[in-house]
Image (tube, rainbow, N blue to C red; front, side, top):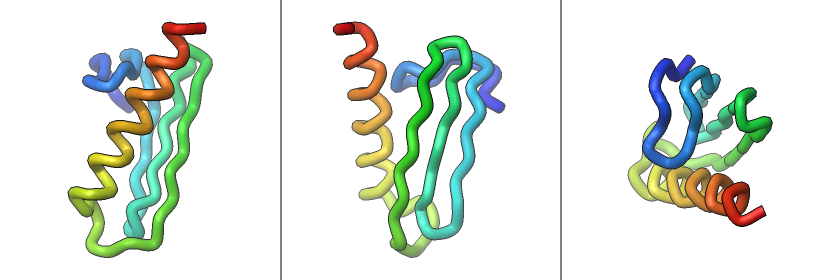
Length: 67
């Protein structure tokens, strides 16, 4: 549970999870949006995957602003 807003657009109160093979999701109930990214890359928290996840999340929130 993220108690503070995230740097890529998440609201406070967002739930997120990360799995061993760099699988991640977030649920933002206040903005009514969710995101999922799944890979099969080790090690966990691979810098390239984390960068991709950040860009993906930012683009989702930017699209919400534009709508």
